[in-house]
Amino acid sequence: MQRMKKASTLFKHIRCHWKYIDRVQPQNSLPVLTSSHQNFRYTSHDVSQSSQNLQESYKFLKSVYTTQKHGVLSIESGCRKFCQTYRHMTEEEKLALLCHIAENYGVDQELIVDIVKNFLESKERGEAVILRIEERMRGALSAKYQVLFSDIGRIEGGVKFLLDMRADIIHLLSSTKDIDHVDRAHLIDLQHALRDMLSLWFTVGFLNLERITWHSSCDMLQKISEYEAVHPVRHWHDLKRRVGPYRRCFVFTHSSMPQEPIVVLHCALTPEISSSIHSIIGNHGYSSNNLEQEKIEEGPEDPTKINTAMFYSVSNSQKGLQGVDLGNYLIKKVAGELQHEWPQITQFSSISPIHGFRDWLISEINLASKDKGSHSSQLLTEAEIECLCNASNIDKDFATALQVFKDHVSQHSWVKSEDMMKAMKAPLMRLCARYLYIEKRRGYALNPVANFHLQNGAVLWRLNWMADTTLRGLSNSCGLMVNYRYYPEDTVKNSQQYIELKYINTSNHIQQLLTAE
Image 1: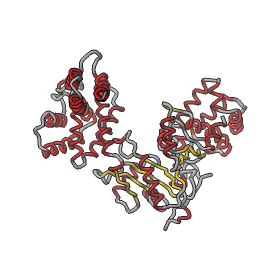
Image 2: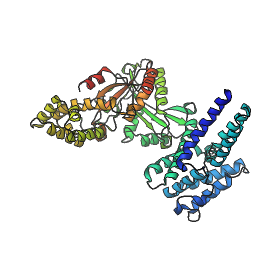
Image 3: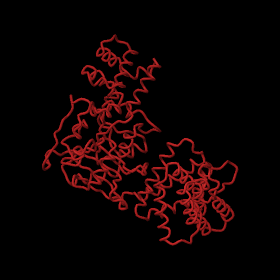
Image 4: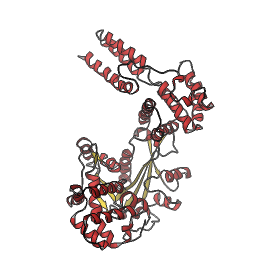
């Protein structure tokens, strides 16, 4: 029985690898390892025609990773030169080199076939033999380029180089359309291997939590400003506000790249859960009407004004860590730091943008325009149609009201009229609640920010009207923002319900918006 369990484990390794083989080999044929760069599919990038940069890189790879007879210093020197050469390559040269590495320095497929044959012939020879075969299989399933990555990771600046290399692969896969399907499969495996290795190197235990203030290094402040993706920093005065009194900025850094922020979290310390981003970042957006305003605070922080921690921006600053979830851990670490600093804090919430809502809404309006049946009746209620027509001084008609609704959503013109703002509020709030709660992708929230916070155990708590009336906010989500509230005692339970049961915890406010349909 134990032997069979071991055999089952071995075959799991084999099946995982065979998925790779199926993608790059015709069915009913044995896998063949391409070991010569003369078989490289990009004929314009053959060694004989390639640039000097490529030739030097190919020579280094062939000399070092086809033999064991090299010292550590020699390998480190070669890796440094390889990294320097790669950085000066054009995109075309990088693509050729990455495809060459992925195809020629992957796993030895012939060796795997031999090990499988050996296993089939030896499965009755006892558990000790099976264990030795498993060990050989684990070694055979490790690609040669993983040794290259490990060697590069040991040199100064090597980890950052690997992050940038993975970012290049992701970019090339998405932007280059004429990559051969086999080469694309090799590149995908290459970037997955890099992701898995970087995931181990960037686990939370290896990261340092650092608070950024106005007295932090200019280099770090500049990077915080440049990497801010949610609410772009407008100028130095804006940045000073975001790291000043009643504000907190935390980053994860890695010991191998201490001056590079890995993930950045901006937080505001407030007396209540904010319903507008303008009170936090001091940007009055498209119009200053009906917006919360807050002057820039100076001097010591007053504890009586601090009851809530508002997370208003989480940015992954390293494209090479795409798919590696660190924002979740940063939020939890920061929540603990803030509770230690301010024990009176009892509320934790985000105020989050709703990227994609406006695009989704316009798509739904287009569908409703074509379909006069059930879909159209779900989009606008009778009361909403009447309000839109009255605000526009037109006769009550569904098709006309729908066109008016679409025009205002597309052109943001509704923010200029008090009457139209009132008419637009009910349908926009209701449909946004539907977008966040009902619209799904594989059973999970369609909106990526919603999916992030819900996976972390937050509650879909409140939709906020006219919360971001900047052009960016209007273009993304018609000025709406949402609070995802964190109840520390319930986050584990909420996260488990969402991930395992695909259940979204919501407040009564959200449920009331949904039942308005």
